[in-house]
Length: 217
Image (cartoon, rainbow, N blue to C red):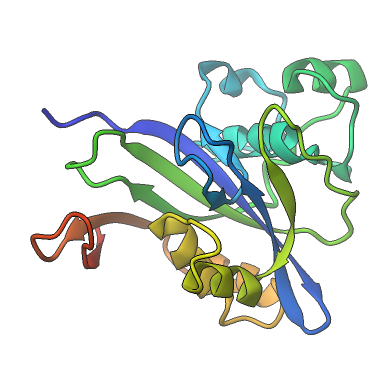
């Protein structure tokens, strides 16, 4: 039986430093989905995400991506910019501070759907946003093992050398980022392209070592 994908969302946060791009990444705990993997901040959609105070008419999944980012690394993207707000449930923090999430700056990038042969499936919306000046990351120990800014090239090297475990969509978007030398160039590219829906499929008979075709549906 084919499993119905769980709606999810993730936020790719980029900045320029010393002529190269950095990106925020987290290491997931060794429980739940993708244990021990390095990923961008994100997670499953919560039905209550639609009630979060957010500016504009955000696309599906953006409120989730912003909430998960706040929960995992302590950064709130608000209409006043990036803020390190007090800890606690995101909805309660926003209500107490009167802040609204920024639903206009992040750019939709892609939608990845886990192949139908997998026992756990996600339908994940990816967004990209420039960091500009951000407060220091505040990783939540109950959410992530580690979080930090990483040069894109270094993240790719960590995957190639098998230091980091990473799922295909994360690696794919790191390679996409690696072609740019500025955050604005990456954002402009995302703004100029159609949001892709991608369903990776098996090209050969090996599930252990599959070849992937990106089925841009």
